[in-house]
Structure formats: C-alpha cells, structure tokens
Length: 179
Image (cartoon, rainbow, N blue to C red):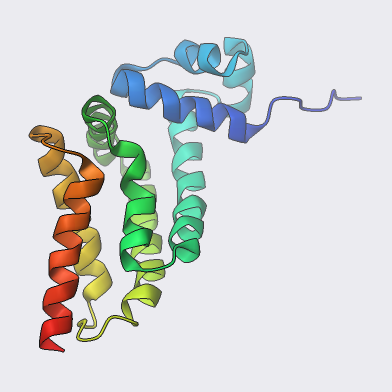
C-alpha cells in the first residue's frame, strides 16, 4: 500500500515560485526542495525535472489567473491582482528572466499563451462595464500592463503597482471621456 502524500503539489509549486523570484532562471531542483523543506528526491519523483516543475507551475497559473481576475472588484483590481507579486525590482527581473527562458521552449510558450488567453478572457468580463471601452479593451489592457511591467523592471522608479495604476487609469479615463 502506498503512503499518503503529506507534501502537496501546491506546496512544491509555491516553493518554485519563491525560488524563481529570488534566483531567476538559474534555480535548481535542489533550490526548490530546500525552499519546500523536502528532499530533492521528493521533488524529482513528483515532477521529474526542472522542466516538469515549470510545466506544472504554468498549468497551475492558468487557473490562478482566472480566479484572481474573476474575484477582483473591477478592471484595475483585476490587473493589480496579477502583477502585485512583481512589485520588487529584483523579483520582477528574476521572473522576467524566467519568462525569457519559457518563451524559448515551445511547450512552455504554449502554456504562457493559455495563461494570457485566460487573463484576457476574464478581464473582458470586467471591461464590459467600462463606458466607452472598445471591444478589444481587455487585450489592450493586458498588453499595457505587460509593457509597463517590463519597462518598470528596466527602470524601477516608484512601485510597479503605482505605475500600472497610473497607466491603466489614464486609459480607462480616456475611454470614458470618449464614450
């Protein structure tokens, strides 16, 4: 009879997220195991490899972004829920470094596509309540937030949350003024 799992996948994936935020794409399975307080064998047995960990994290992120955006009170709250965790220059840089690696891998790139499609689809529900917003408002706002996050990561002045708030608010007010 197999032993019951006492270490959840969520715990291991949370550790992976923390390690990416502190180590960037140079992280190892051993780093994840240490962060989770488990053996390397536990992580390897569950996910097989670093690539397996990244696939599992990407798959979990799709559901997470759906919930974050769906549960937000409005457009700005939805966007901030997704980016709030990057509001530290080194964390943002490490996550962007991992993003670059993920984009080079066809399987991980496809999962990123699913993530951004889910983000856009859920955000579209919120943008329907914005007077004057065009039909492609969700796509525009996701692109704006992504661009703002990258630009801020290169030149971090103030906080990312404040920068995204300022940029998104300017666009929303422009649509409302023209609506």
